[in-house]
Image 1 (spheres, rainbow, N blue to C red):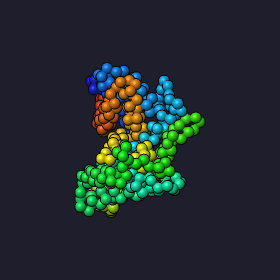
Image 2 (cartoon, rainbow, N blue to C red):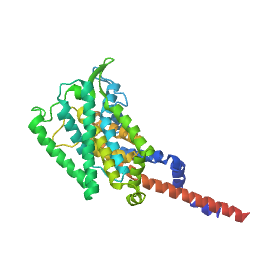
Image 3 (cartoon, rainbow, N blue to C red):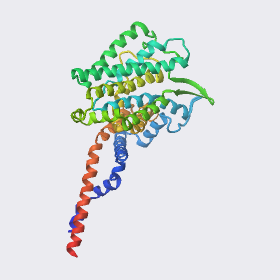
Image 4 (tube, rainbow, N blue to C red):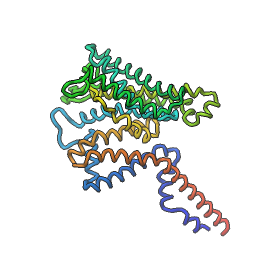
Length: 392
């Protein structure tokens, strides 16, 4: 009996249980394990194109300011690269939080890019070209981003509960509407004849202090990053400590049970999309009036779509999203430097991001495998124990 019990426990079962079996830490260990698997898969892809994976990964970190380069231009250093990395990470963090809030309520906000564009254009048109002090302009930009994002997100929520229009359909359509209407307005009123983009906003309205000299270094200081960290704490508090957060999660888990329990499902749908829109609006102003200082017509920021991967990787948890946005932004930011120094095609960075998303989507399956391995070990131990009692 005991030998038969021993045979049912494979090395794979022992490995999975020992590595990932602690249920208390699975929210961390399983995503980390998935990321490691994805990086191994990415290393294989890089090997197939004839490059050294370690050198490629090192260049990714160098391009993001996470690893020192061999040399730097005047008034540049690893710190300046890292500040630029944080500048790009800021809208990503806001956008991923926007996706996560909608996820919690059982909604899929695929219109984050459109909401970013609406908020960014509204702030640009209203404040971006005004000759007013920065202490006035910058808060106005943030306020406009919040309001416009909330209105667009709230419209999607209203269409969902009032006419039962799927939020994926309405948000995609609003993406196209925003993209082409705003392109028309840029070309007719705000276009720069040289760049064919919107005119650059004034420095007083930017949420990034560009080329600021500190200690002999010229760097971009992202003011919005502090707001993003506050947003992480605020969303965490909202979801874990407030009645509204509980209602949103209940509606997302089972809307029929939530309605039976007395929760106003329609109100929760609109509220979740408005909050999601607020965060998307902040992503828009930190992107178009932060990392960039203009808007490219007829294009949507890829940040809004990449944020879906970031949110999934972070398990829709604000703290997890903070780390996942750090990882995805490092890959995105470092891909150009990797391409120029190592010769790895820039598209490989997108492959790495896709692999991370793919393996992260398998998190539930990995958790199932761990549970099945634990069950096998429990059964084997029970058989072994019974066999000893019989022998006794």
